[in-house]
Image (cartoon, rainbow, N blue to C red; front, side, top):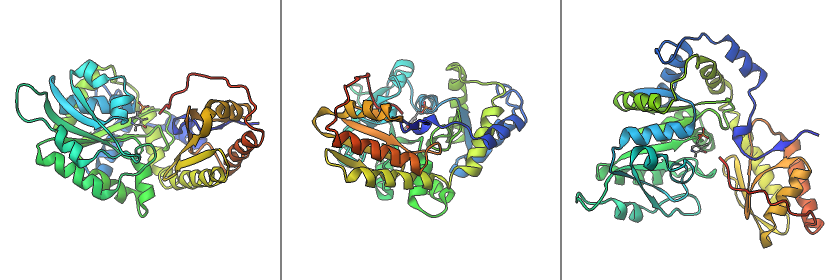
Length: 355
Ligand SMILES: *Cc1c(COP(=O)(O)O)cnc(C)c1O
């Protein structure tokens, strides 16, 4: 029985066609700047996002870090959601490596920081304060697409105060597909408001490795220096860029399938007593499990070959490696758990949400 791995959309394996594309890629040495596959990818992603330049990155974490290091200097500050990836899930890199102070702000259940909180956190020019330089937003956040008018207002507010704005768009293609219409047009519409955007190829797009940071030529020149310093200068990385090209050719529109599977899961779980389905707007479904039984449910699911993450709130992520039959197995296994009264002994693996 094959495993239904709903822990993250990072678990996707490259398809046979993607592997072929990788093997066929023309290669150079990207530290010398002459890997044609990397060059072509960077130009393509810059064009998609409507930015002057793009830089291929080994990971989304390094991409966001290079963005923050390129926007800010030592003693500067960025405003960020308390539960945003760029604050909570990147090891404090901006502070550790850039001496950039985060100013985390509360987020609503769908990930929005209030405009009043953002305005109040922008410090006046006074030596008591760090210099507030950057606002970081995330789209999608925990599977929630950010409403266009929120993005308009938050970025306009930042600009009024002279802040730059960065989008952690690890899953921005999911937001674009959820918006409907041509996803490339939608992506452009979302990121037009931002000075820089980081996009992941290694999530729902299904590439094994890689992200891209996009922004002005000047910003990307600074980011290139940081990437080198961080050890992210790769050599024949056209192998990886080819996977990203393939993903852009073949795996963007199909994100709609992942969203439909998430809906199917949310609907199936919605009818079960003992849990509450929180959201399923794109490819992530959060489920609250009553009476601290989350870890027991996770263990029960794992026993049935269904993997998810979480503790009180469980997280299920759909991607190109799962199908409707797998989703139905997850639903059936969950239903059995509650019908049997949750009898599985708990194996309390240290579980935190992983991205
Ligand atoms: C996955 C993710 C990242 C980081 O990507 P890695 O490639 O895992 O370093 C950044 N932001 C968000 C919102 C993510 O989901």
